[in-house]
Length: 126
Length: 372
Image (tube, rainbow over all chains, first blue to last red; front, side, top):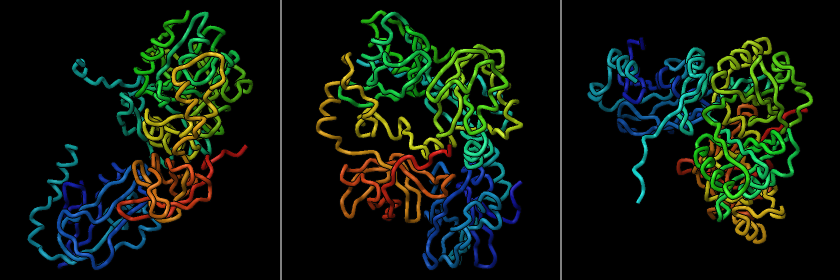
């Protein structure tokens, strides 16, 4: 079972909402599929992201994958630890492996995301 | 008229159940369903560098060429000269088109005076099998495609010899690098070659497919005290890249000739027999290649990948053909084709990574050389 307090995208990002601040990362399922993560490229603070827009890339030894913003908003913080320890995305994807924080511009977009049960079903069928 | 494309057949390894039991993530490669990784690419990679790894290479193509003129037939079919091989020795070779383009890179083993084993890449094996059959046809030699009947397991890494020794009566120390001997391994008739694709010492063990499981189980048990890990294609790729070995489909393809790939030493332009591609390759050797395969280490932040453009200043100079983060060196490395004038080690170039230019330096190959 995935964490119950999060929202999910079908591209395997997660969102933790606290007021109008959203913390974003990728799920354990995604991290496991990618394998050893060796590089994470994140946007600059202050950048405005649209929902479903690419916000960066995550690279495993083998491949490069795009990261998609679950919600629209302005980047207020990126995880500074991932530059030196990208493997945190594998070892603690829902915690220390978080990627960025957004000031959410349209909380209504949350309705388009998956709830934990729907995401569990998505990965069960993957 | 061309025939309608046949349904693509995906072969499964005779060891598929064992991979599943070990929790392997599988992938399709060269028409075969093979293990991509088990515990993880980095862990598997380091196991091979530090101890040993066990590889299922059942996907590789095994082509036997036999007959009184087998040596001459292969010399005419390939760019190298297998007639120079002593029995029990092997050479790296290539099969080229008439225009000099590389159709596959191969290892040729001389098993007997009149019997050779040619090991081809999985994805090319059907093509190489057909071409070899055609090219040896004028000679007193026949091609026997043993790809499906033959399985291959490799043990690679510094502890390989101590792992395999208890399983065989063969004197493994007497098999030199690029040598091969026939004998029993775990009671199974086998051909044992001291070759590999990792940059480490190790053995490649060919047995009949029906006995692949027995061989794997025996190697697996023998390797446990030495900390041997099962290793998938993911780490096989990073290991060969650190060792500076090209991968067909990434770094080699029909548009590339051996001189561009820095493999001119393999081409026997002066061998007595004519061979397919000779005229074109002679012209290329005389004119000099128009691009060269080089090693790059990224000095800026980012990982170069297959297909990324390479620039020398504002001038486009070439393209990356393989790239990864080197688990041994902890930095991003790549193979790329660049203009000959930019191929000297120490040359600073830039790789375009997602619309940004990232600095890289041309370095001598290999990236990694095992301690002796």
